[in-house]
Structure formats: C-alpha cells, structure tokens
Length: 107
Length: 122
Image (cartoon, rainbow over all chains, first blue to last red; front, side, top):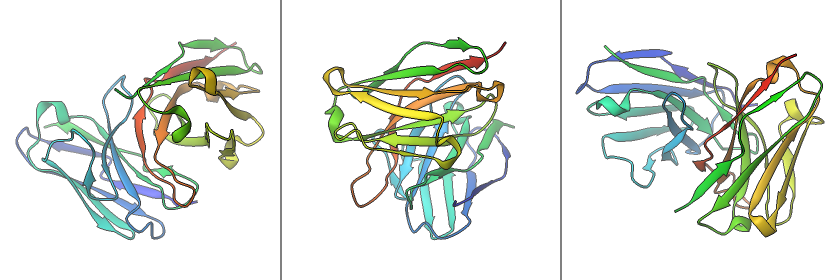
C-alpha cells in the first residue's frame, strides 16, 4: 500500500496570507495525485487532479505542483471560506489512499 | 448538474448489517465507476472499494474483503454498499464518489455524495 504523509498536521494562517501544504508518497505516484477540501459536516470537494490541474470552478488562488513523491498545494491568498481540512490522494495503483489531512485554521 | 444523493443516517447494533444507497443523477450512471469511502469521527478518509455500474464488477480494499458488498441497480441509477458484522469501530460517515477511472488507469473522485452516518451501538 502506498502511504501518503501530509505536513503539517495543522497550519495557522492569517486571511490574505499564503498557505503551503505538503504531501509525500512512500513511493512514486507519478502525477497521479489529487487534493480535496473538506469543511465541517460536508463531503470532500475536489480541488486539484493530475497534481496540478484545477477542477472545474476552483479559484485560481489554488495551485498544485510536484511529481513522483513530493507534492505541494498552495493557496496564494487565504479567504475566509478556505479554512478547512485538506487531503491529498494518490490514484497511481488500484488501491487508492489518502493522506491524514492538514487543517488550515485562522491565526 | 451531477449529483449523488445518499440514504439517511442509520443506527445499528453490533453484529448487524447496514446497506447504504447512493442515487446518481445528471450523468450516465453506467459510464463511471462508483467508489465508497469511510470516515470515522474526527479521522481521515479510507477507501473501501469500487463498483463498475455497467458490469457490476467490484474491487474491495483488503481491509473490508469479506464484510463489504457493493451492488447497483442500473434501472434507478443507484449504487449500494452493504457492510456486515458491524462493530463499534465501524461508526463512521460513509461516502459514495464518482470516479473517472478507465480500464487502463485509476483516477480521482468527483463529486461525492453528502455522506451517510452509520452509528454502531448496543
């Protein structure tokens, strides 16, 4: 099983600042990585797939980068609605796995 | 618009089974795999398995093999996930999610159902 490790567990950021979230895979997943946002009481929402392609309707302040084992989600200027938990997911093999999540909270 | 609507919350006793439904609309149900994901309270996301709504073929995570059964009814564009021999640590929200898998490559999930809370308690 490919283990996905996200860091940090919690990120405290002020509105308007940049947030950088990391995700590491235990073995290469090429660019087969997605990012999801989850708010309390809601289902996850797709933000990024293919490591760097924004999903339909996702604002340009969200960007993804990386390949192989190291990936980054950047939120360029945090808005109030962006405070949430973010998960990375690999889909490189036929056993999908998720990171444990990064909570982005208001500083 | 593409939408997945799941059945309501359930309370079950240990040892029982639960069957959660996921009704799809806004797209061709048989054209996309449907996956199921579990989220225990305050925890992360755990992939359970998937079903091909066209063929009915399934793939299950090893952890749930033998306890989970995924089925579908094409006539009403609905997928089902049944989990048997429930334990208290099965208390969780269960999500269905459409995936862009092809025969050659796995893919991402979009959208997700709203989730179904299953509480296992004596």
